[in-house]
Length: 134
Ligand code: MN
Image (cartoon, rainbow, N blue to C red; front, side):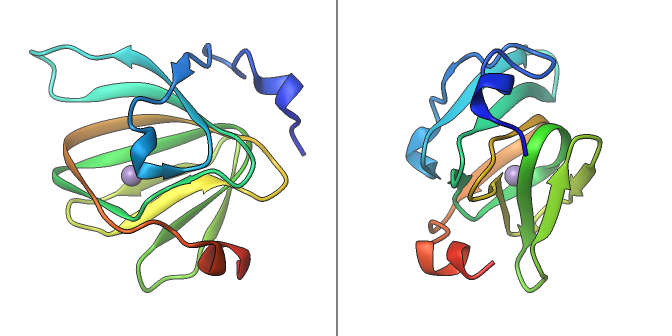
């Protein structure tokens, strides 16, 4: 299990600041934008989740998302499928239009690089009831 002290400065990349998309998350997360350029059609960011922190259900439209897990332990779940554990070295591809969420486990920080194209549509939160049942 990865403790905050081990990852607070980033497992690989710096953690960055409080996530400006925090309104679409439950719990505290951090974002370090690594590549954000008007003329480049993907954004790359390092996202760090405190224990129990997760983003709302969401969909990447007209694009996709690739998650590269870099530290701690987390969850990834697509609608209608079981949640899967993510650990450093795991790679997730979310295709256009697939409803899903990602975040940390109850007792661990989690960090991933997110490579994202298109527009995110933010939906309902992942409730405590849902999360605690995992
Ligand atoms: Mn996503």
